[in-house]
Image (tube, chains in turn purple, cyan):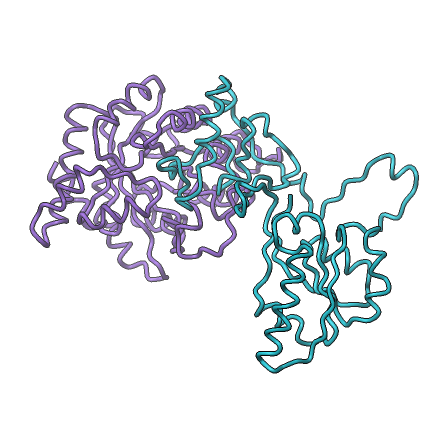
Length: 293
Length: 227
């Protein structure tokens, strides 16, 4: 039996579509709820980011509860940046107790790239160890080997970076994540399908679902900024040029066109098992992208 | 070697302000090599403090200077016995260990830090010092081709690079090499990539219950004051 609606989906042969919502900076969740309402029926699941780019925000677990309350299917993004192993286990227990069972296990961005640069980075675990931790909990034990009263069950995911400039060590880590129990992968942003194809030649030997990360860009400037400042982002010059060549004010339209084009090709050519759309603060446009596919 | 940086003159002037007679105490070991608190730096600081005092016309301090072989060992501190009776404070230019050993040896005199103790490292080139060891108490350098991910990866992670590495550099600082890319390349060169494919479990932080103490068996058996 599947542990979640999303797990049912990944066990099927459907083309998977997920997106993500970044919680607000502050306690006003109205816009977030609006986005959840807009997206919940159009997506197989909605990720809620965990202080994305190390910028302090409303918590991912709180956001997942909202998704749940609105009738959506949340994916709880958990990073190792801010919690030690006690807090990580506790949050997973809390999540499970409230029906949040899809968990994306991430190491987390460096504190240095965020808005609380003087904070103590935790990184008690890394992403591979976090996956193992969750699987150990499913076996009824905490990390110290103590028995759990009430055993959680999860659908576990992780990330991978097919477009990195040095792929070999990333592939080793990918395989470690598979062995640690990852069932699905949402990739970092993909802009060149050749790298995705190449990655899938390697990844298809494993029984995991790969969702290609699609970042919606709004301008050449944004693309350049993300290239220079956001960890894990490598946007090709061809894409930046394409964005730079449109009239002023038409950047987002172009960005939506590029994203839709990528999704369409991935789906038509069956390049991987689905897509994960990252609208980076413009969650409202995600339905437009999917309509354009 | 321990690497330190001398505090700013402004900060040093602030911490010594309540005291009249100040002993500037250098250390002849690590901080001499890294140019933060050896005999030369003590002399230079002494002059700088005098000049600043004259310029600001707030001349209340009288300074003396002395550099001992090592501040982190009681036996090297005996020579200070007479000197400390004549001063109101000691500004130690030794590392954080030196400051504390001097304070423990002379309980009636305030001991102030004159340097910020930064890390354990090596001289990459003259005047450039790089951190190399985090003193984690559980050395695994055999598994990582002699390159320490605890120290040199900003996240100290054990199972390979994060996705933030770009052009072989770290996401936290584009001037710093990604430790895991270095480890991969060296393991490949040594034909030991299987070491990277292994799963490494979470670190055992119990090996570093602070403060740490190591007791050599022979010393304990022969008696001794372990405080």
